[in-house]
Image (tube, rainbow over all chains, first blue to last red; front, side, top):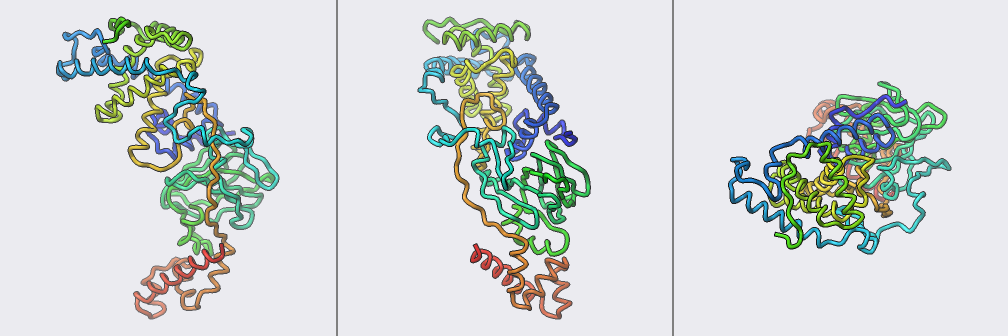
Length: 262
Length: 203
């Protein structure tokens, strides 16, 4: 059962689009797995939309056309109203010249970074799954596109495996698999660490986590993640600063943790 | 002024609920019949409201109008993706605007991370993912590090061990070994450089 969720404020900020891209991914992937948070996001989106477009009366006075000067809010000068009105007229005229998306040769224009030329020729279903050692994991919708941006698995130490995910330059994302008894050396965080449990359970000396749990850690938390269940545990993790190992030989990793648990 | 498209009177008197039904019908007409008249009603209602949202978000008239234009273009071109059963026109149009704003800000802040709004809120989702092979990152294992550590000269080992395993400060190490602080610093630096070099060679 999911016990750890993003905070309400994080969900609201997610809906507003004001979280950082990396944190947005984590919240979004959690929502893929958590009907409860999904519902909160839906309600919050409706609330925000109606607040912006239905309840907010001020802009109604400057309808694109047909506004009355008498209604004009005094902070806008008459000339700016006129110019914004003609700007809207031009905009409308331009837009309705545009063909609809279906007729543009099936191509969808997107502001995103992808172009149709990059579309994979591989089977669609393959990109939804992660394979390790004969086991296959289905990843949440949000993370699917990153399956193709995931490097090879490498053994860290003991029963710990990691595959880096290239997100660009903000924070470093990894899929981490802890086999039964696998453990990450005790560490704290110079920055923040977000972890989403994709499949399985683990504990870290602070709590026990289950599939779907959303875990936030920063410099105030020191923990030692460890998976004890037979099936091990797959997590997706994003850190914005290298981890700081706090005990034993693992400390030696600190000068290199930027190459490592990056 | 548009030729052939009568401009609408203000919609401001319409109650939200009725407005949602009415706007929803217009969107369906745009999707089914490319009805310009219906679109101009949707436009006249939403564009000014979007502009005031966009001004707050972008803080600049030109960017705000770009956001309005992109949002309304998407509404015109992708009206067939609107589904009244899933939510109101306001909600749909808000999510489009929010997504465009997210991508615009990301670009403006010159952030290179490959996160795009479609991944987070697939409201206009008709795309399939691409599969760019990510280059293999350098990987280091604990065993590897331990092994390489033993290959360091003993003086460097001693310094590194005190600092990174015992957690001592460089000054403490200097006092303990009765050597100048500068020597501790240079040994540390040399040792790390050497380890780094060995890590590269062992790739």
